[in-house]
Image (cartoon, rainbow, N blue to C red; front, side, top):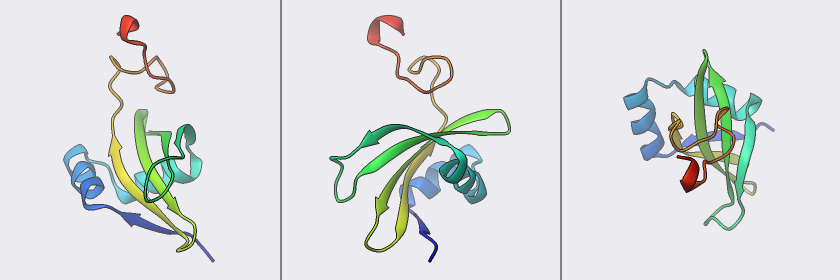
Length: 97
């Protein structure tokens, strides 16, 4: 059985504002790289995934509801180069920004 993808309203709003499609998010979740894990998030542990969409870096924050077999997309955004190291995998330390 496949995992269902659920989009929070916030994610849909941000995707619309930023010209990001549902297929873009699917591609990132299934082919991207998890760069941070948030095991203490509630109600479900979540993760930050980096993916590239037509040479555009995108971050997707998603939570896993294993019991319901669904992935919940919380938000999607373009990582700010002033906050992230080159490659967008690691946050800049405050003195590097």
